[in-house]
Amino acid sequence: MVIFDKPHALADVPLHYCPGCTHGIIHRLVAEVIDELGIEGKTVGIAPVGCSVMAYNYFNCDMIEAAHGRAPAVATGVKRALPENIVFTYQGDGDLASIGMAETVHSAARNENITVIFINNAIYGMTGGQMAPTSLPGQITQTSPYGRDVNHCGYPIKICEMLSTLDGPEYVARVAVNNVKNVRAAKKAIKKAFENQVNGLGFSLVEVISSCPTNWGLTPEKALEWVESKMIPYYPLGVYKDRHADSNE
Amino acid sequence: MAKLTFKTDNCKGCGLCVNACPKGVLSLAADKINKKGHHPVEAVAPEKCIGCAFCATMCPDCIIKVEK
Image (cartoon, rainbow over all chains, first blue to last red; front, side, top):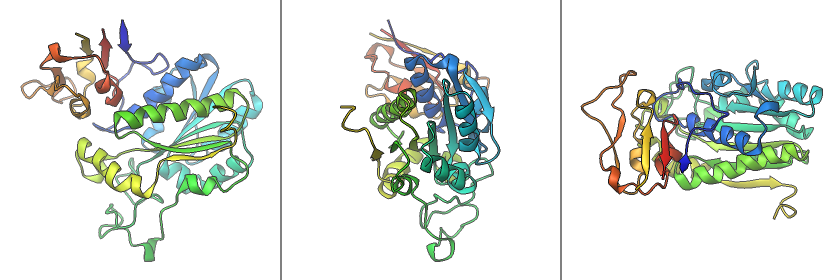
């Protein structure tokens, strides 16, 4: 009996991510959810710009590559033109929380019936580890070698807290993938975000606290410890908004 | 006893599976190098495997298949 194997929706190719990068775990969770809901044939994914720019190579469903930060706008167009299809975006923090902030906020405010998977690893990974809008106060990056000075660079943006103040979005949750327990909780949240779209409920965003061992300068193991000790206290996990929380129980 | 199968050439030797395993089944092979140039994971104590799939759950590269 097979207990665990690669999901069908995940392409059988090597991933280009650095050793220990949790993008691979989150790709797999999304693919598992696509498998379980049986929606691979009608799912359209929107890839971002960033480390996961080549996500279109890794999912067996249809994929579109969007301009930097514009994935929710592209997803809006696809979903409105093809309302029977399931549309998700997969975006990093440099993509969603920086250049794509307007698209993110407005698609949430319009309650577009799309699913957004937001990977927050507090750094720009692909371009070599610059400070991101989500970098923690005091965090050392290529462009903040003495640590992020909040008097000069401002404070990190907490996307879930911010979007949950809007009337628009259906579901906003933050999860992490630093241990087995959190990975399983992350899958539940991602599944709910896709189910909401299948049920026509509207905009669902799942923020996944991820790691970047290479640009944090840590081993994969230490990077996950850093997620636990530094990231999660600043970005508390949980469901920030769920308009149909009672009816789902 | 559960059976583990690895796509060894896709392994990047990150070791997250080794840390996730509650039974000490896995280890990175210090004396082997795969096509990517990493020390790949191997089961050093396969008889201890209980099939919990914690290793596969934490593997970012989806190289582990678990059967029971």
